[in-house]
Image (cartoon, rainbow, N blue to C red; front, side):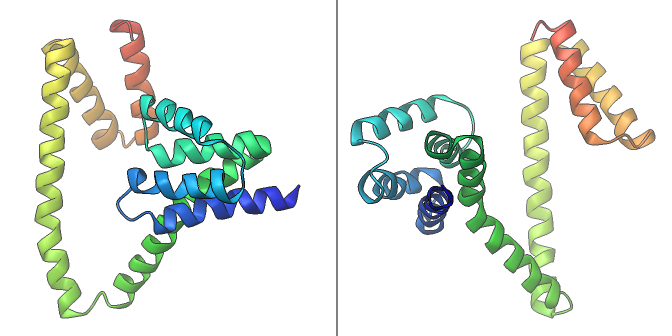
Length: 179
């Protein structure tokens, strides 16, 4: 039984490590692992799995990893598959952050930070505008303003956890907006 968990880990880790370009790049690599290497699924079953995964929200690689892991090893297999799917990115992110932290006083790293900060600010500003506009168009200005003001007060004045603010917004949406 331990061997199947190791195989689930390897299949997802290898596909996601080599799948440069995100989820769509991992699909054929994962197919090679689960159809041809381990023989867990037929090509037809894998195609149906990908079609179903594409119909659901979220990243395709983690959805496939969760399904494959569950089919082969139950709930623990699913958790192992999902972890293996995100592990390459997690490892690279930790390594990059370690490198940046080590050289944080370097003039080049400081220059990089100066260049990146405004870019991130613009991207966050654009995302905020799009969220505001979508909210305004879908639920109207009254609900949008209420959520913005309450969110601001809870986050900035009362210093509530963002988790509770998001949970509150979900409850508000389900009660007042019929979500």
